[in-house]
Image (cartoon, rainbow, N blue to C red; front, side, top):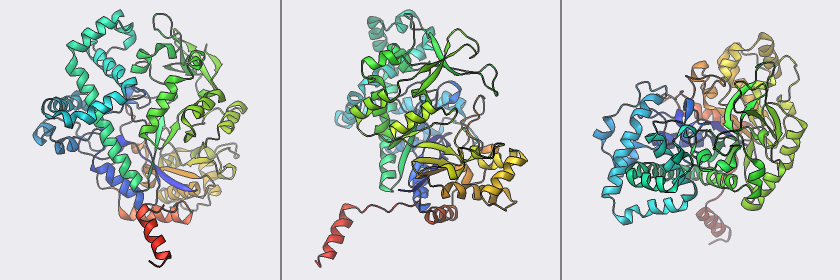
Length: 517
């Protein structure tokens, strides 16, 4: 079934609270997707952002980002007032996320709501909260404790905490739990509110025929609740310090390689308990999303490990990942799962074999199709049905920026290949999008910035850089019915609007009509 969707992070939604959240604007965007004939909304990871504000360096592989909680919903629930909300600043530029202002003020506002929830809501009203705490106990207790300990430790990485915290001394942690009960309650409350508001938005999207494609990083952050709580899952020594970390070997673009610093997995140890941590992680993600895009899928085939004491990635070693055995165990425990494999980068016969064995669709990025070789794996005539075609991803330039900055050769090759005679770059961008829609790929995903023909000012992330990533936001009232109609026409022309399923009442009415009743 051919489908189309839009890549647009939650953080990039317009809102009056400094960052996109589960507010009215999120529901308006779902309505826009429906009008545009889109059946997929692809987002970035939903976890709390950590180092560098990156959603790929989260403090938890299970938790949700408290910044996405909508204050207006809390006001409607009687947990906040407008005066309390307006007393805080979350940044003055509606086109950018101000993480500094959010860090200083968002949790203070949520703390007011949490205090009121525990003080004023009766036991019956708090029952769903208690149910949530019980259901998510596997990860939630560790996450709340980790965040509390991180706060009392001056936000230091857990690898620098005092030994009692680092080694999970039960008596000390019990004492900390008593002394800092209010802080723990705040972190638990935020996860409850996140879940409740997200579930409501997710259900609304389903009602409108829109599936959520989530994003799950292969690696986790070293400074995360998961690494602290489950050291046995990673290549750590007896002192809970990394033995090796993740990276990328030297190549023509980086003579010393790339040192990412994420902990690498203890795959041999994980195999002994049938990958229990990973299975729970996947289960949690499927509670939140319909489909999961796994970033750096190639790591399941092989990964590059660098000794933790190294300053560059030059002396790393290529190691085998768990391979198809992992996915067979996933299928045994979870059944058929819907995964998009981010198989970009170095493609080897081994990674191709693993992707074929899993049956998961890989990714084709159209910006990668046009280079000096003039024969690329990503050109649309090389696509297959079981794949997902993108004009670009969150790590790419916007298509407008790519067209403006690529070489004359690559631009001319793209123009000839997609049959574009438009000298106007805006029209060229739409021709580029049209080429993606033409692909035989079952699913076509286009970043929202490309439909809006935005340039470098709207880029989400530039890999290998810090300071200005993950900040772009859509300004209010930009999306129009005219734009939705243009996208809808494209989706209809290239047969990317799947037939809508009948509701139970519609089926009943049709059967009654057929029988003459």
